[in-house]
Image (cartoon, rainbow, N blue to C red; front, side, top):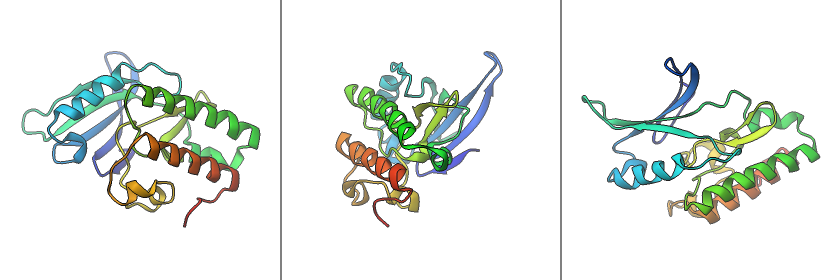
Length: 186
């Protein structure tokens, strides 16, 4: 288990047939991400069609069955540090390059009608040492956590949902955080 969020758990697993590590995200049927099932599956279908060097790939989704009350989304596993882990050693020129990749990835998502939900240094991982990859698109972090609150847009914190605009707000907050090593709000 790599982490827990309001929608379920995030785990690393091994795809023994293809011989690779994958990320599994469980999405509880009672979570807002699985409401009516259809909108959740539509979003996952769109995500599965995205091939961008700055976004993690979605491989498949397994529906709930045999008494299991979760969807399981199999995604690319990025074996690298998070931007949060890497930040203490990030020079300004590197921060600009990394955020350029993050913004390109967000632009791809937004162009497909998908808001990430809550970009943060914790869900941006560095593949091959220096390529930023946005993880967890469409699976917003619970804004009640301290780290989410510090970078979330006001409308997200007020429970009004996520949008392209809230993603842009969070991206700007990440840039602030990289430049100052402190969140823009406490």
